[in-house]
Length: 174
Image 1 (spheres, rainbow, N blue to C red):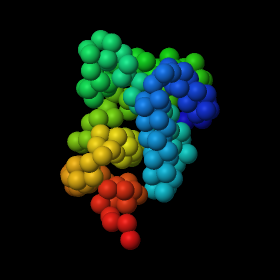
Image 2 (cartoon, rainbow, N blue to C red):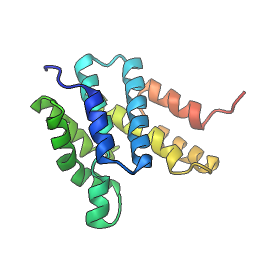
Image 3 (tube, rainbow, N blue to C red):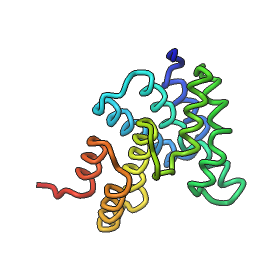
């Protein structure tokens, strides 16, 4: 698989798409950072890392369209509408067609936690959860703890993802 495009251009395009919505911009930036950290610590190959990073940047591209069309930002609607938003951003930024297709598949499945086979999908799901766990309950550490335990037991699989989850939500500061 040929490497294509620069993630910086995609990040800037996604920031422009999400302009005026700092919460969404902060979210995808954090998901990207966690995804990259997990992938590098787990020894992911360069081509798969390239795809994962692009997917982390655009994984929630369908939220605004979901809010316009359905009045909500449910995971199901994000997955349904996200690829159609992400695809032109990726193409404009110069990503190869095979990369665009895989990134769009990941966008369409980033809330699917059952039956994950591929490492890029696994890491994207874990990175998104690491951010969502805090963002969904910023002032409720007990809720975050319960969510983290459930997620760890149900779908976290990478050693690095589990470490990041436990360090943030399940360990006491000492």
